[in-house]
Length: 172
Image (cartoon, rainbow, N blue to C red; front, side, top):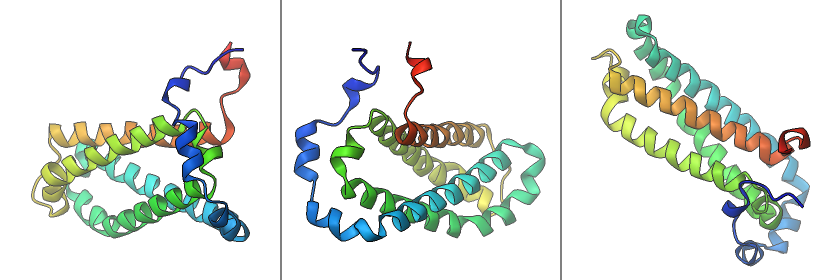
């Protein structure tokens, strides 16, 4: 049997079983699909707005237009991120054994953590002056935006691989 290259990163089965609550599972079962839809829609909204902002940070010609657009996006960006996080945690606890056993969950969580650290660093050092319209994007801002694009794209790819898995043709 071929072992998955990321198998060493899986959460321990005993921990997943300890987190499993059948009562929560049965309570959420009638609305599970709605929670999943809200999670997917909020993640798509967040990723799209983040991508637009990051591309604007990378494009020097957007300097004058970035601040007004970014000011419109900040609140929906934060709200959609919060909804995606809350619904993601609820979906995990809906069936932790099944979700936690997937090979790409731990890399996805690691990428989310790195992306959040990058966002924290960028908000404190780079984005606030741009949001206020005081400065054009600097090299640090462009590095932060590039990292953001790469990390959040990685999160989306890991999410897709968690749902669908890697086709067997690529595992040879």
